[in-house]
Image (cartoon, rainbow, N blue to C red; front, side, top):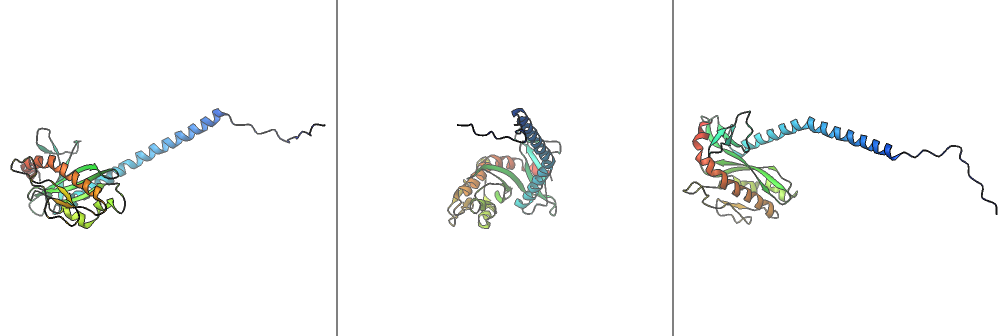
Length: 234
């Protein structure tokens, strides 16, 4: 039997790209992408930082009703508090609010705190009034809680009303709170140190309660001890 006729091509078969060329092209693309990412980060990070600072400044005045301006203070390491200058980079900062319409009277102290929520870490800012020894405002700065449920900690009016006069009084020793800040079932709050939970978002509600309880135990004695410094700081 005769062999089948051979097929002839008018052009030579295309040259296959070498692995070296492919790696070089992929490396170049990766390098360009990396440069673009770094450049984008460098260009946008200052604006992001400014936006966060503006958000924080607005939140300070929001959680300290009656304050018209504020000054940053930080712990000195020896049990004291001192005003923060522009060149300082303290590990922790209190934001002390004053009322320029009332002889620059001390209104309160805004305190940042954080803790684990249902989905991720929750960052909050709460206002403390040393005169009534109570929390007078709370603002969620950062949260990834479940939309429609856990995220109500930032916008539910009934829940936020818990922090309009939350009792965090210190005992005679000036070191411990008289009553523990506790979460209760929604609609069963009977005491000023209790927090009504959000139905369907108990974990997120408990997270806020735990954050405030932990923070106030540590920081309120320091604030009360240094009230004279804060009052004179206006």
